[in-house]
Length: 171
Figure 1 (cartoon, one colour):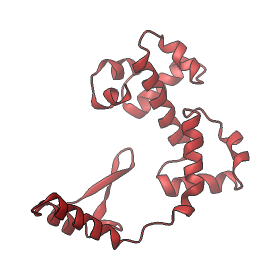
Figure 2 (cartoon, rainbow, N blue to C red):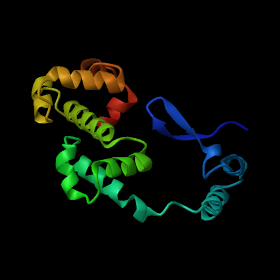
Figure 3 (tube, one colour):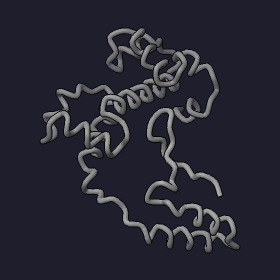
């Protein structure tokens, strides 16, 4: 059958589900697409996942708390200040977060910050980019443009002028 992929592990890579906990995903895929009814499809999915041992979510609490902190601050965080909220060293926190999310805290904060800025810009097109970047904690517009280009491959102007799926989702 083919390779079944899900959840990017990094910017330029994908996860092959056949090499994970879901290695038998091809059989599920076959059963779903050869079912006679929606009810039968749901039964196949439920049976498939009922046999899986899922990760212990208490083990990921610190990562969820870090994500929530980053979201609440629109990605504008100072890791040094954030460490006082958690009882582990900087290296331990970053390693746990990396293991659970496949991103460093710094990367995740940057993605969150850029998304928040572009969402704000999409909903406030009359406001200047300079004012927006200051509002979200950048010291200058060129630093924001550099980050945006690093992550998306385009400048903020090109990103917002193109009518793409991601930009439409921000509105």
